[in-house]
Length: 177
Image (cartoon, rainbow, N blue to C red; front, side, top):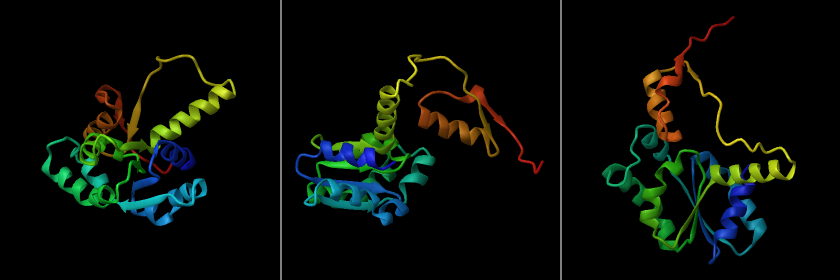
């Protein structure tokens, strides 16, 4: 569902200069570019594959002041900044965890559009329109079952979800049964 993200970026841009950050596959596909150009043929797009972002995020390198992530952000985003983009699509689920660092590098006049947030907003609108959105805001139980390292999952999931998940994780073995 790239369309909600592209629409949100197009609504946000004032100068029709949009940057796209994504994985190699996302950038190579050209999908965001196609959607943005369908909205306006004269839009200027600067796309950057950011292959180091995912492993850095997964290793907790997401905090302002971390020289490693700030160096990588500078390397990847300098062409977007030089091009004068006023809107940047964060085209991977990991990238919003770098939002503070990216925003600080790009400056206050640049709008960041998270692909996950744009899709979630679109889904909420669709559910509301169809009368299917639940009014319940909390409740329920979260349980996570992992086949890999429990401690690794807890660290990464707590980072992504911004809450402690340590009491809710169980390691399970995969079987052929």
